[in-house]
Amino acid sequence: MKIAVFKDTAAQAGKPVMDAFIRSLANEDYIVCANDKRPEADIVVIWSVLLHMYGRKPIYDYYKDKAKIVVIEVGGLIRNKTWRIGIGGINSVADFANHDVDHVDDSRVQKLGLSLKPWRNPGEGGAILICLQNTKSEAWTAGPVKVWLRDTIEHIRTSSYRQIIVRQHPRHKEDIKLMLTEYPNVKEDYPKFTQGDKVDFDKVLIDAYCVINYNSNPAIESVIAGIPVMVHESSLCREVGIPLDGDINSLKMPDRKHWLNKLSYCEWYIDEIEKGIPWRRLKPKLLDGLTNQWSHI
Image 1: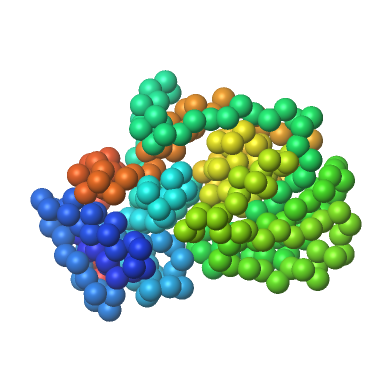
Image 2: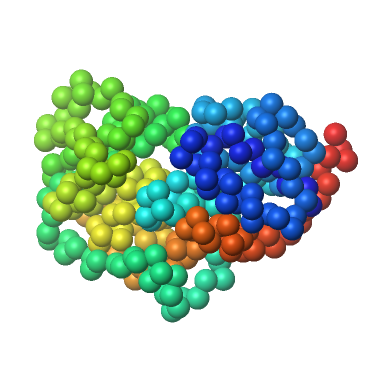
């Protein structure tokens, strides 16, 4: 099993994480590659699916049919302290080798210091919160964001006249102000940075009836905070939310313990990465069905 790690696909903040992952491969057949190199490899390691940045797209496109791709990215459980590592992509597209996680054992959840707040009473909370995301990510597959947003608002209005708040992504602002003026009782919200790159999401959740999000981290934060969600099927919250075309007056509030247990095995502290804990979980999945794709090239 040959492994190629493209360390320079990570931004500066991600390089220590890449270094930790490289050290976990000490007993493997691996090389660290410059972004312009294309060695034969069974496993390729890159940072993120924001493929327009740091030379990621040419690497991804070259290897997607030739190798298994491990994607490392910023985690959503403890931002800048835990890091998500999966095979083949991100969100529910990825394989995190966590399907065997016990329904009851929440020791990892406790280690991460996570706790589930009770579901909010459906009669409480006022606004419907639509959280936008970075549409340049490969995770976004909904097409033009204005079309998606218009369809989403109009779907809501078939059954609810609650206030709608459209919250922008903190680093990827969409030009939607004029469009929103077409709809009564709809307003735009801008994230405010509170500490480092932490934003004030908890404040807007205080009065949220539910959160609508395609497939990014706000849905995860919302479910943990006890706010029901509507999400795309590719979201990591799909099993604890309802579909985007569902009935906003019939929100889902299931038991979340097993969901959070599984989610806790998607993300890792940097010392755990260096010790090889996520690598040992992923390795059997990577070896399963591995064939020499290069023999056909």
